[in-house]
Amino acid sequence: MAMAMMRRRAVGALGTGVRSCMQQRQVLVGTYYTGGAFVVPQQQQDNQNQKRFAVKSAEFASLLGCGQQQQLRFLASTEIASNASGKDRGFLRVLKAEIEHEDDAYDPPRTLARGPPRPFTLTDTPGKPEVILRRSYGEEDITLKCVSQSSDFGDSYNHEYEDQDEEQEQKVVNLKVSVTKGADQPALVFSCFCQPDSIDIDRVYYVESPDLKETFYDGPEFSSLDETLQKQFEKYLDARGINGELSNYLLDLLEDKEQREYIRWLKNIESFVKK
Image (cartoon, rainbow, N blue to C red; front, side):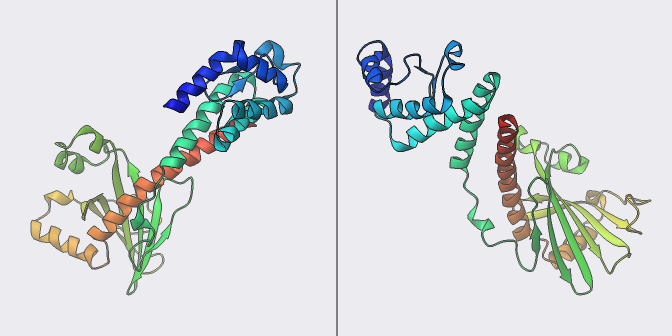
């Protein structure tokens, strides 16, 4: 706080003592402070050398008692200003600040360092919303596709969890489990939702041919099945490692992926605007 007050006083003294000190250092008289960068008024920019201005901005930051890290940020701000059009400079500064904030705040869960529960293998492609896990079980090939989606696609899910708060209803982790026994063979497909310590089945499909995008008969809602039959389906998945431990891992992974994709999105936009 004391340092911030000293800087504000230093900026306020531009018309007196600091102005004379700036002149001694040959800093441009027309510069002024805008909360993170020193900018030259538009009427003077066309006649000034941007590289010289970047160096002088760093000198001015040093004059105000800023540390090395702050000086580098001043310098980066002037470099952005030199490469972008006048209308986009403010946009780029906000983008840069948001990226720095998200980078500093990003802290991946420790549970992800070990990778998925064995023997699953993970495919996580940057830019794609879903993650894919695979494993074999005897003669079976098992593929899991997991994505975070809005909660308006599962009627039974919405009914079961309608009493939860609005924030929890906005996003759910949807899991699709496909079990096949060889290429070009029918598949048993489970539509599920990941919950802490559990995987909830929404519906079970029997896909007669891999070429068919939809089955002729979807089967009943899982919640309408006899409870004994429901438990047997749940045991079927549990025997293949599709259980609460895997669900917890996927919840952490999808939350982490959403954060990583947001930072990637910000950086892509920044790169595009800079061009």
